[in-house]
Length: 141
Image (cartoon, rainbow, N blue to C red; front, side, top):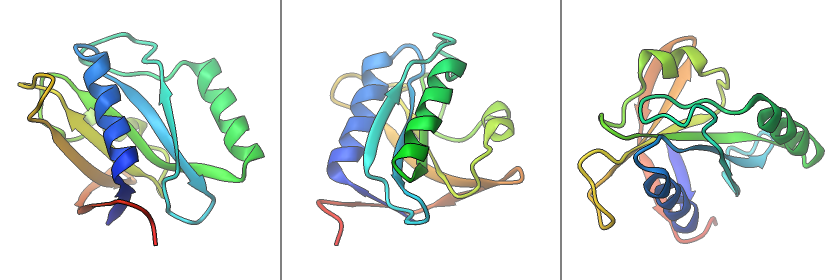
């Protein structure tokens, strides 16, 4: 199960809506081994595409160095789907290389500024996709 604060949830949704019609992407980092998403890091979709996302390699290297310096890891890797449901594509599955991470997808298909939208989370380990419950909390206990 993914437990996420309302503030982080809202930031992911806002980023997904702001980048529409292109896919948005980013990471929420947290302390290594905690499984707790804490630091929202929106990234630029280097592909600038409505059907594909790609982290810029230089930005990604900088991100991983910064997380290492802070003893963090990617707890959530998120992106949006602009024309399809919030379910990992074959490409998404092939790029999923963080087995401890929650892969969040937000679908902005058929949405306007007020909604509706889908916010779903998955684990992806060795190509196996498992949907998980998302629990939104005001603050972590």
